[in-house]
Image 1 (cartoon, one colour):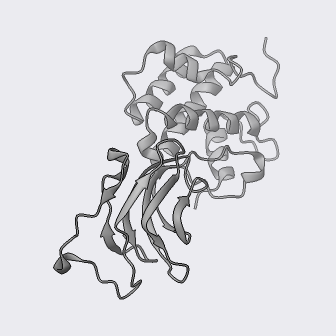
Image 2 (spheres, one colour):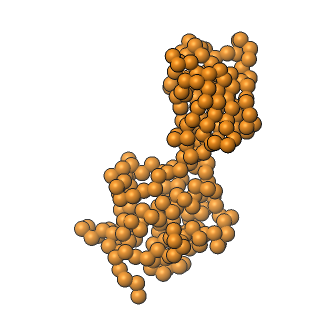
Image 3 (cartoon, helix red, strand yellow):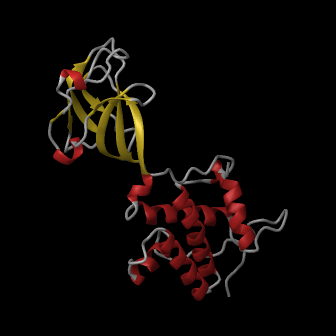
Length: 237
């Protein structure tokens, strides 16, 4: 398990800022954390696929369902499953059609085994106005436990110093690329433009974003207020 603190110390070591009892003297933890968060933000839009998850969601009794707390963006309700994720009935295409989607498993011989639930969904209608809301048919009985497999996008929560002992749970590709993004930003602190650009190019290459414009690359390097990050421990000349 890699904790947030482990990840920061690895970066600090490469930057030569890991002297025992004097770690993060030049590049503070907050600077590194802010840069990791910026790297995630830079990756999230063009590579939303890296943040796409499948979750088993238990439905509430009734017709109308609201799972906005599970995802920032719901792409599809793909199947009715049991609690362990075994598919009972496919519900493909509900997002693509933006309308009621009838299950294609209509023949009696093709029906899923209903012994675990005694209840099967016939259709799902995603709400085009309120992402994360949808209707199911038939309505879920109060006495039934019904689960669906949902595909969606979940944006990681920004890291803070309170997370230092927690596991770093970024997607592996983003975790690897963010390392170079942070180095790129810190080299700007030292006004080392050449190394900064080299690290940024590695970040873009690892995420298959090499076609991004130079201006766009410079913009993602900037601090949230548009400025170049400055060191927290050493005054710049």
